[in-house]
Image (cartoon, rainbow, N blue to C red):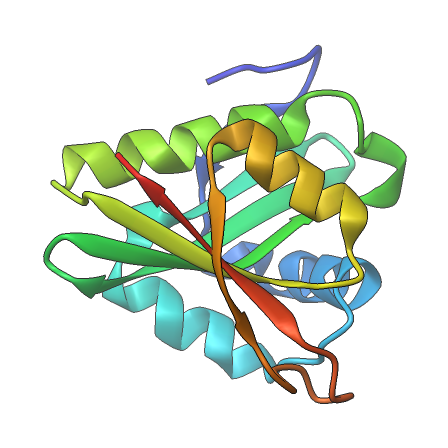
Length: 150
């Protein structure tokens, strides 16, 4: 699916690992073991979607099913130079479409309490804050638990 000029959506492939890992390190505060991406992607390949371009991966969303009717977004990243261009909205829409196809009714995620831009984005996408998870991140910062009902 084409989105803007030469950007396109597709499922993650093993060839994307290095670029996805580098984007995660650039855009997200937590650090992850690269093997985690491969392990998680094998459990629900349609829940790992990337935005590609001729110059590489520009965004990705990685989700897992937590029960037959629920999913959790583990990671969501858009490269800094592409933020505010609607790419995240399109990527989230595609992920939610995959959730609906699978019969998922509830999607959840965690977000840093200090990440105001992400919180605004998630509210706009239809998520609601349902709880605070104390000391969720490695540096001790709290997270909001957010959910959306499909």
